[in-house]
Length: 229
Length: 387
Image (tube, rainbow over all chains, first blue to last red; front, side, top):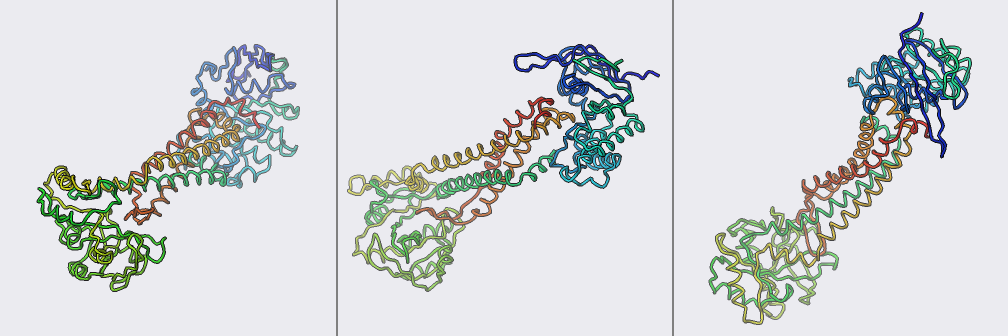
């Protein structure tokens, strides 16, 4: 059964300058991602996977084309509007975790909630809930340097989840992890998708990781070559 | 937000501590220098508006014939209530470094002008019995409470000075210890009888200055002019002015101390600004990725800017608070000697503390602004790619 599209990418182009040369990273790409879908983006290096992910999360702007999320074209938003939208709508999971080293696990998870005008108590309650969900209830007061890579990534996932965003964007979430931790993280993403109905878009080079997704979109030369809608 | 800022400060205790320490030191110096200026000002503004001082028109160090006192008294200048005289003794007590002011005075008039018989109230506080004793004891002297505490003087103790301007060994007896609740009049001075000095110097009959008490309704300018006109055609021309103007003239001997102290204070603050700016720029450079993460999570550029400004404010403001607070705790209410000027009370005023707070805030703003703008302008993708 076809899902309602949550994200619609329409004819998006993006070019980067490399020295004097202009490199077209996304070449009038169009695709859709359904609400509650789990999609893996695959392709060789330079195929435009991460650029597409950045555009979906409004970390960057396309040169042309439109990106509709729940019917709203986010490419028309101003910088501040886009920042508020990111806080509300997207949860990011990075390959390098990107936790703030000076904050404890629970404080890292609370960080995005600072933008929601919640009381300190409520922020703490939600952060603890998120950490419990990823299985780190016993590591809340640990600093990132006191955690393993897998645990750091789980804190990052808790941080991505804590605002209950419309979708999660994961950029090589297991790229820096050993096989055992990778499996644990992929299991966790599976669970978020299956049990909580989260929409997940994941960039990966690993076939076994991509196989966890419902659909694999292959990119090459800035275009969708397989799996697109 | 503050928690995030404090977390960063805690994570780099040495760096932020040194920066805050340099701000504290700068503001401590600023407050101290400013306090000297305030105290100098108090010495002038706290003087009586009803008192004139007559000195030689040639130089402050030129003596006047003591006969001039009688000349002023008998001239019946309108508004003049009493005329006395003071003479700077100088001399050495134990060691040339052990400095305190010593004046020979015309004790009965001194009592009438500054003591229990003064119409405007006592500047030097003694009981009537103590004043009487001082008047009667020819080789007696009175010393301030500060001096008594410093040297352990007690009533009845001998006090010996070696003369410098007036050679010889001068022996006195402490007959009373005075206090003062007027910040202009210190508790670090010794007063003794002028006749005792005059006899010891072969009756030179000279003094340093005349002190003239005026009626509160008197025209001070007219009185000054009338007094100076008495000596205009003599070899001892005089300059008569209000006590405040006299004190100001005395302080001018220090040169333009205000400009010098101001320059030093601001130079130190500027040096601290450069240190703070460097710390903040380093802080941003090391946290480019963090800026990218914050923006990814939805923090606006303005919020990121505010975060770095807050950090600068915590470091510079904390330092400023510590520096100004230390100056207040160390100096406030304490007497301080600088060369020949004694500050009865070295006052770190609220105005000085407010100035220090404003400087601290400005320092934070200026040192934090450039790094904050740099941070807020970073694009997310570039920031996340940084090491």
